[in-house]
Image 1 (cartoon, rainbow, N blue to C red):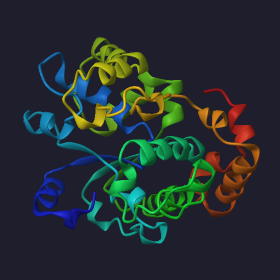
Image 2: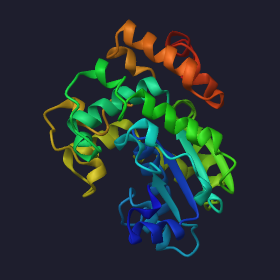
Image 3: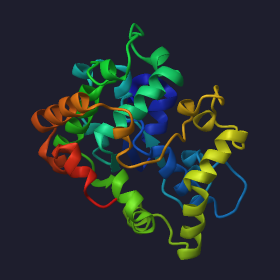
Image 4: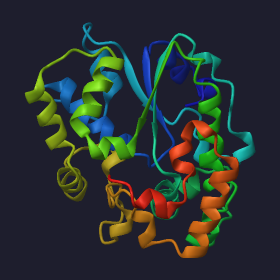
Length: 277
């Protein structure tokens, strides 16, 4: 989100107390679905519209989910590093292994309209080319992660959450998130129901049948399994798509360029794959 994008977005930013921020394809829609279901507690509504759910209830702090400044659509050198506008906000930063992010974002870029929304749309290569591409590729992910690692003292409160930890202990990570965001404690049954609603199988079904009239879970090419928003939901799935040379290139780039705050992602991919998920 770029605050100066429009007066409407500027006003929305001012009205928001806490943000869940991530680079695209880090599991934000999955987390958003679970949190929205948890807040609705069985009431009618779209669980993906978190901001509206919170605005409708005076008991809830206003919460929004964002990519911050749409980093996937710009040259990596233009990704913003000044996060002082968040000085009065709570920020939860959702990270994911860049190796998995880049594969998922490649399909978002080529099959779900990402190319049209980028600053330029001249890219016409394959996945191997895209990982090195300066507008949406691994350099973008690293620049965005680094910007937040180095500005994590800017918000009133900052909390790091990872996609891998959310997979490993979904209930525990959600409980911690509820505490960080100062959301009401509705008890374990509400948490379990939110996790069940956000399961890969249920979210895939929602997307397949168009159960939510929300563009975030709409697939314009249902005959193409790689065009789904809910595509794989795997940790380490990049190995199904990337060859050894491309993984080695990413490993080297992360080791050299990624901030040590994300030290776990700086490990070579083969070591990360050996860890429990």
